[in-house]
Image (cartoon, rainbow, N blue to C red; front, side, top):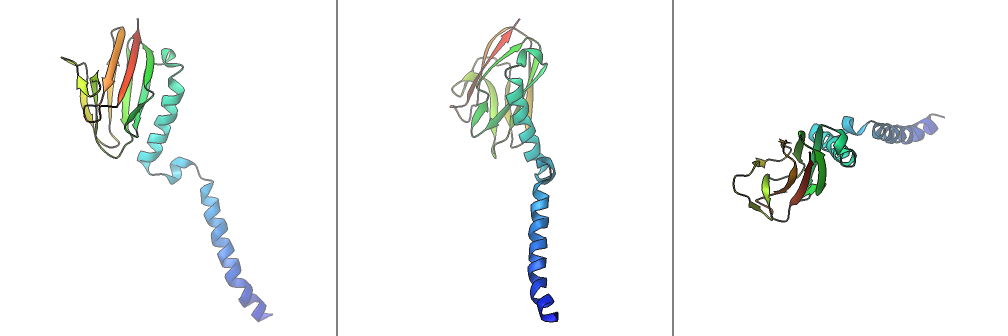
Length: 146
């Protein structure tokens, strides 16, 4: 009987460790992810959720990932604050302009480091093109309604 217990004990221990590892997978994503990653995931959900209903919110988020703005088009009411969150591992800019070229006297021209953010309030109705001066293919069009 002692041999049987000795033979079963390692298998039981390995099985317990595997089950314990599986148990930690059921924890919420924010509990197992670094704070910045969990924050970026929450921001992505907020950006996706706020795009269709942007006219009903006063705070909208645009996520920068894979060298692109997400979403690439946005319609918001005047007075809305838009927060740009950089989820890439390198610096971007949020600059009024197109194809990497700023307009004269831009309303925003800010660098955003990895995991950084910048917020811009769009008070005046109109169409605003936002680009990244470092990555000219990054563009978003923001339509502000009066």
